[in-house]
Structures are given as C-alpha cells and as structure tokens.
Length: 298
Image (tube, rainbow, N blue to C red; front, side, top):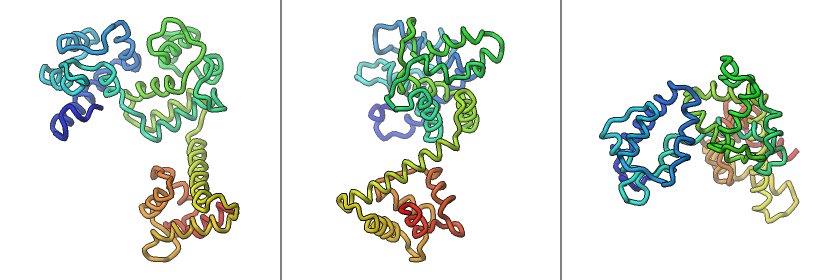
C-alpha cells in the first residue's frame, strides 16, 4: 500500500484501512464471485487509473457504496503518480491484501500437488486433476454443473482471460486465493476450504516448513565453519549461538529467546513453526537446545 501519500499521518492511514475493510465486507456479503469479479471489472479499461467520478461510477456499477469523503481519501491515497487519479493496480492490491503465513502455506501446498518439481507453473490438466470441483459453492448449491464449474474456476484463476491458457503460474494461483481470502475472516475456515478442495493437510505443511527451517539452521552452521564437513564443529557452533540467548544458563530457552536466536542464525520463523521445535525438544515448557542439536546431528 502506498505509504508516501500521507506520510506518517496515522489518521489517513487508518481511514483508508477502515474504508478497505468496509469495501471487503460489502463484497463479502455478495459472495465469493463478487470478490473474484473485482479484478475482471477493470479488464476493459485502457487506462491504469481512474478519477474520482470514474471511481464513484465503478462503485455504483458494482452495487458498492462509499461516502464522498472516503472516495476522496481513497483516490488521494492510491494516487501513485501525483495526478489526482486512483491507480487501479495499487487499489486492487489494497483491497486484496496479502495472505498471512498460515494461509500462504496451505495454498502453496495445494499448488505443489500439480507442480511437484517447483517450477512455478503447472498445466491446467494437472491442476484440475487435483482439484475437487464438487466443493465449489456453485456446484454445492446446484447452480453449476461440475464441468461448467471447472471452466469458471480456470477463468477466475487467470483473472479475465477469455481463452484458457495451457499453464497456470504459482503467482496466479496465489492471487486467486488472496482474493478469495478477502471474504473469509477465519483462518480455520480458509484452511479447511483449501484442504478439502485440494486434498492436502495443514499438518503436512507444518512438517515441511519445520524441515525447511532445520535445513536453513544446519546450512547456516555449515557456512559459518566455511564448509568444513566436521559436524561436531557445526553442532558446537549452533549450540554456542543458542546458549548466547540462555540468560539463566540452564541449557534451555523460552519461545522469545529461541526466536531471537534463530533470527541471528538467518532463520526467521513464525511462532507456529517455532512451536514445532518446542513440541519436539521442549522440557518443562522450555526448549532444550542440547537435546535439539544432538537430534539434528544424529
């Protein structure tokens, strides 16, 4: 979101955030198709921006409401080039927002089923082979057949395309679910929706993320000892670094201390992932880093 429009003024920033939240709620009440349709509603525009009159007209044409003052605020905030027009791309990014770590992880897990080699692309045939189209709201309500729903889903993934592409990118996939997430407040509901649609498990996601963090920590230790293959030295370095944050010198760390230590070791992780380390290596509520380093290098 463009921070420079109002500088550090939190009043304008908060007003924009409130307006975007209200707009998402209006769209959410209309259903997921309205949320996903926001992108395509701009497809026919040749310009990358709208003035206040055009923006007001766009709101009305989509059955949305915003006060005149809020329209002025939004147009000023998303005025990227200083010409007094709302920049459409910046505005869309503002409405959509970004997936949080938990939501992003399950979405990437779903895409990986059709892109196991992590190329960043997958063929639509491979993607649809993994998608449970019966879970789409329109199919469950009986308003679309499964075959028609597949085409609708692919069109939504591609944004506005009339011709279905042969490949879908990871960015398109994430963008689709970022828009869909606008209308889903609960993380649990969102995760359950993706798990059901793609037959993936969040538990598997967490384990993958845990293993990735382990690889980062061990890679950091390996690099610090300049590639020496002596794992004893690498283990000692990792243990010494963790010990630096052990203020009580008892061989264990609380969660904040552990997260500070791993950040020092070039591995920033969410508290959810840090909890996985605690689940495996904690003793009486504190992570035993002697046990952890022995296990990692066993």
